Image (cartoon, rainbow, N blue to C red; front, side):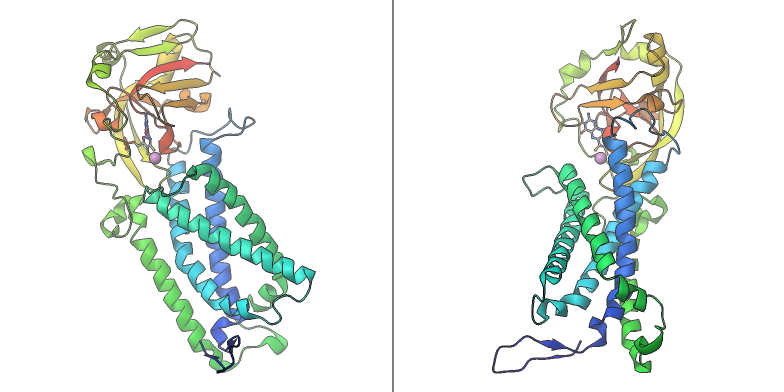
Length: 382
Ligand SMILES: Nc1nc2c(c(=O)[nH]1)N[C@H]1C(S)=C(S)[C@@H](COP(=O)(O)O)O[C@H]1N2
Ligand SMILES: [Mo]
């Protein structure tokens, strides 16, 4: 970076460094754009799986079983990779804060306003997402709806920005720009050094965090807030039984109620006497960690059949937990009828521990962790 301050009169700095030119902005911008595109698509997938619009609610796919794990792993990884990319992008273009005159025309003012929205929303999305994976909520609003809404603002301002900048993007997209835009020979080393350093930073933050869902890399998981192997029976716990207010007494009096045309109740021993199945499925938390485990229990569809529930019925699952957003969950028939969907009684060859949902919890394929309800006490065919 080269700029000169002209003293003593306070003036705007003037920048001549090549690392602040349109070529650098394009080179960094397309990497950042790719990371944000992955974030937006996977964010949308996560949103639809968690809060399906009515038209899709009956068609959500329960396969591939690992789908949500990959999608949410990519969401977190691309968001983390976008942090160094955004910082370098902002650094490369910040001299534009000082253009003179600050506003040339109405379209120019609108363009600058759209860039302000883009920068603010991008910073907000990355910052709120990072705090979310650290399970730290230092704000008065609810994370999911705000992160989702601001995501749309970011998408809109990004598309507008790419349209406005299209001529520069097109001119600088290739290594050698044609005609008068050809880069001088001495241009290469400093830009290459910047991009190499940026690549190194992206690689470093990715490798030290991606282990929270790519378990073979868990050993490198130095910066991630969660380690996938820490927790009872090698599985992390977001909310403990004590934290959810599950009392000894509630557990002692526990019965599973199944509501449908022929409602019935089961004790834990009666559940254990039903045909047991074993599945290997991950908990894929929206907060970015995933871990596969072996679950044993009763197929949800067997429980529903016994209550005479129709094939296409939605199923409402209620937890013993008295308060909290994850107390009640609705499961479309695609999951409820999947042979992999269990009311699990065992985890990794042992009885389900209290913090993982004893006496019974839901485990279903291709679903966000928030919907894998623990301490289940009731299933209702709707
Ligand atoms: N009743 C209830 N079920 C719940 C939760 C909860 O707070 N209450 N947390 C959910 C979340 S966010 C996740 S990621 C998984 C975690 O399951 P685990 O603690 O067994 O790993 O449980 C889900 N089931
Ligand atoms: Mo979660």
